[in-house]
Image 1 (cartoon, rainbow, N blue to C red):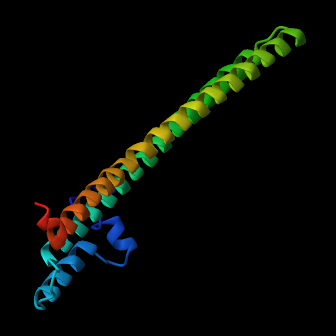
Image 2: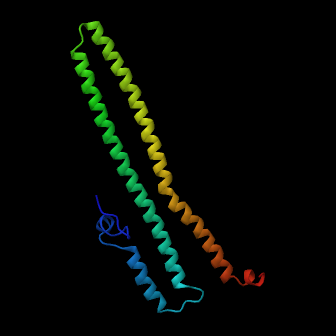
Image 3: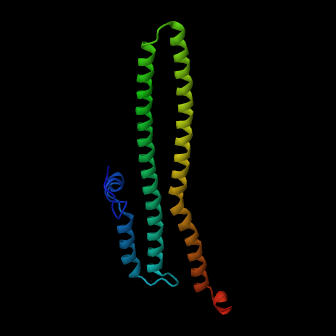
Length: 165
């Protein structure tokens, strides 16, 4: 597993994106844009806003990756538990004294296996749902912060809004 880093675009993501690092690109853009004087454009504010957006996406990506790993681990545990149960059931069936006893044990095993499979499915569904909520949380929080930033920026650049103060 890749070691977590401060910048999610290092390591695996950087390799997958051909070495593209949006944080570095934002810095390059800031240098270029600061050379020009665009009325009403605060380059530092724009770059900081985009950095926050990238941080939110990084947090969501990290949460999704961790959730995927947790779900895969739990599925592996479930498979191991199922194989152990199947081994025990086969051992018990092989020690059955007669056909009726073997059929009864087999029916009990199938019933238990079906109940366990349903329980496992519900557990995985809940785990996936919780993981989805956790992955979406940084994006939801950033979206609301972004709306506040737009309102603040609009109030600062709108003469009518400034006149009301």
